Length: 110
Length: 115
Image (cartoon, rainbow over all chains, first blue to last red; front, side, top):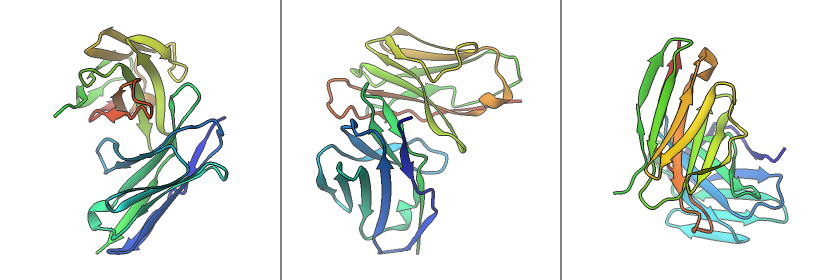
């Protein structure tokens, strides 16, 4: 069973701090990884995608991929209360379907 | 502003009734996904279409669920008969298989409650 695992949280950080979200995956064949943000009652929306080892930065967000260790992380710098949401990690399976984690709930406290 | 649209947004029905959910993918996208989301199971893939052909429906209960794409602008998910355990949020997502990373764009979802 191919899996993507995340700590369900809640992860609580003060406003302005760095939030670190982690994800591990079991399928070594996975090529691409995605971080989606989901506000309560809303649909998932893409934040970052990454498919090469290393870091990828986009504004306050940095995605990190380590294929040897099979983990993906998302760093959110200068966290804002508006970042409070559930963050979903997903990786591609061989047939290009996405395998989803259950999500990590993040609360940014003013 | 290209978006995936879904109808209805909310549906309350009684056990045993048929439920039909509709999705209009983003124009030009050739892949469509149906997901079900619950607190316990998270996002579960029900069906996956590429160029209107069903590629994978292994996540779908075959006895009561069916998914079709009658044309490139419409995907449907039907439940017949519905059961209380089908209560969940159903999302449609679309993407482009020409995109290596094949980003999926989600619709607003249909919130289904089966009494």
